[in-house]
Image (cartoon, rainbow, N blue to C red; front, side, top):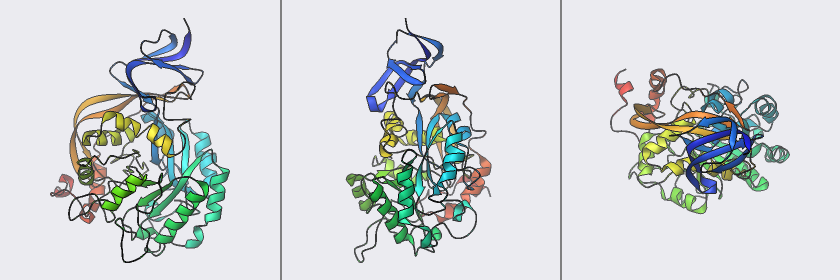
Length: 428
């Protein structure tokens, strides 16, 4: 009987790419996926009992900020992602074409976590820009920082790591909105030239969500291309995808999805509203990709980690297998990496996550401290990256009352929100 390095036995194996949903085993040998099946007749030098757990491909977080120390938002991907079951992260624009080499040398090459990225259309990325540095203004206040040729060249020279282009569309970071249309145009131009997706952050923006008929301005997501990624899908500020008058999803948003624009959660410190998400859930408008927008301002609440954001979608009614798809193969396909990550296909690097759906009775907060009572959540149990097992950590405090008291200050600015203020605001 053959002996492999590891066998993870007896869990519910969910691998959406290969249409696997069985109670079975996963074998790892020489850092690669050796085999997947029911009752594998092989032995392992080490065996892990996964009974009562989910065995999935290594989780992919499609939206993080991990340029630690070089940007104020940067977190450590090994400490905050790999230790929570996430084997691949996609940094969403922390670096631009002038700062990308440091992301590769000091983060990607030194991390156990696989680090990919969207390259910011602005030269310096988020090194010091508006919300990321606490100063007024933003990275796109000056158009001379948005050079299409330079951005294109860096993408082309770093295809192994750069998977797309990032644009932040908000009034306060684009010279009071004067540059927003040009930011959008230039990012999309690079996307077309390089044939990679553009990820658009679109909050508190002068670019309309629902198309105008009186002028020829670009709209978002209407004018995004098939395969592009609209992040912060469930935010409740101006530029939300919900019509505040009717509570319906805007028609142009529905049409964008029909033509192939992808929608990503991008929870973040300000961009996930229980109220908006529930309105979308009623219409089964689920995200294609579940990304956290994890950064230094939300790692201790309200985001915590990817399993906690997955929990929120499960609570809203998103089917379990769809949740797993949105953190594995959907993300891999969106960034053009389905041949390398996002599945348990034989011969791939053995990135494997074991999760337990635990019964709980706990409040989980959104980005403005509105809460919902949640009765089960995803808890990471074990993780393997390239066949090596890594330790699991847990959040120190959920919900984090200090974070809730800080984040609730933005509740009055929401255009869609619960009828009653969050309890933490009433207590102040």
